[in-house]
Image (cartoon, rainbow, N blue to C red):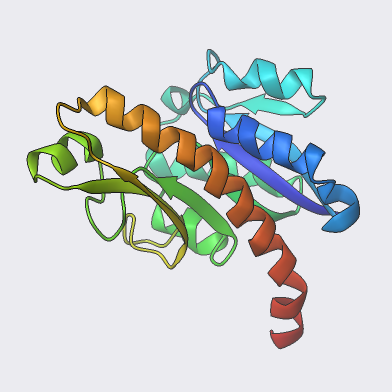
Length: 200
């Protein structure tokens, strides 16, 4: 069974979308894959309760308990590796990951970003799109590399920027598309893994 480990920091709405897709899409039978664990750097992350309700093991590692980013990432890596993951999925995990962590999971670390990359990497994407006068915004699923929000793009969804939009309004429309494209991209990525393993 290919294990998926999901990292969250808050509500876990993208995690929930992936969990639902895995259940409704019968990933265990169709893709030989399962969400094996949900990890968070915050004990108050609401998504932990949802994962627990679905019978998914959860773990909290408080980043504030570690002396450095590298120490936290090393502990996080050790916890993730207990599940021998085929895929590590960032779903609202509000931490910048160290190069060593990213390198360890190279080729099997995914993220969703609330813009049409390569436009607006980093934070405040919705305000920046509005300020730039963009007619369209959206979301991007991509592989994670050491260059922030610059990894290979796996999927994108486009939403219009409407007259009078606020960052919150735009964010809500973009998030609804994230919930659609992220599970699809994860499933497609998993479906390609056997082919990748034969090549490498």
